[in-house]
Length: 347
Image (cartoon, rainbow, N blue to C red; front, top):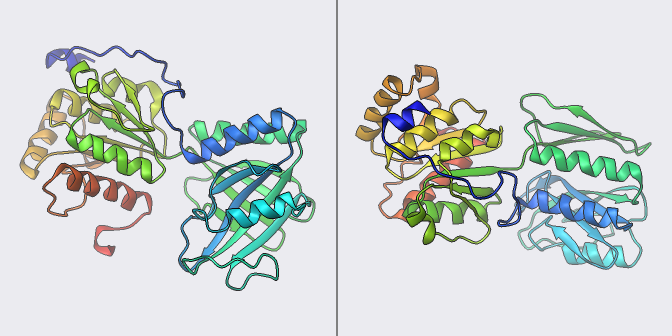
């Protein structure tokens, strides 16, 4: 961290472990797997549901999960509330007794269930009835570890035999593939947003990202900034963002945004972030500021043109944003654009 010392920045001290999950809300898929493991370890039969396909307007994407048990307790969402009540009621009535069931909700559904989605969409859902045996626990633990890890796996589910196994996933691929006999569900690290430094924009950015289902971690070594920052469900770490990023906190489903206008925080974060597999790396500033930053990162940070090209600067969509909330909206929208693989001119 010679760059930090050269520019007169005191390195922060982290007060909680990097893997501490007690002070913030996890990504929804992690909550689903936590509950599934807790209930299965307690000897409960559970129903693990995965969205296979959506048609028309639908509030949840393929791969979204929900877990439930017979008493109606559940974690996760399949439709944002449209079909959960019907599904839980049928579980309580003794439906979904097979190990595997594929069910359609919405227009065109079979005679059961007869549920219309208010948005007019259609959902195909895989329902897995899992008994609390060693095979189930091993399978759930592998899923959980994958969400917390660095690499993606694909679950192969044979609809005829019920056999399930994991294979290494390729670099890219759809979340769900299916044919008459096999369902393949891609499972990867949970979406994460690391916000480097606290500013008025950081607060709104954290709120927007949480609403979109990201696990959000804010890093700032400055006690005076942390003192007044509190966003429900967001982890705050008293450490220089570059140290956290360099600790292995980034995976392929991570976005890193620097939002302070302080080069001692923002530049260091960028230097570390380009060494990671993060899918989005961006830093706030005008075009002129960004040009100066690029020169500085090359000169003092040792970054080459390929590394510089990974950094979105100026950050965010060009919405002519003025207020902190508008800037944060532009930032999070751009992160989502890249995540969905959309070109700017396709918007």
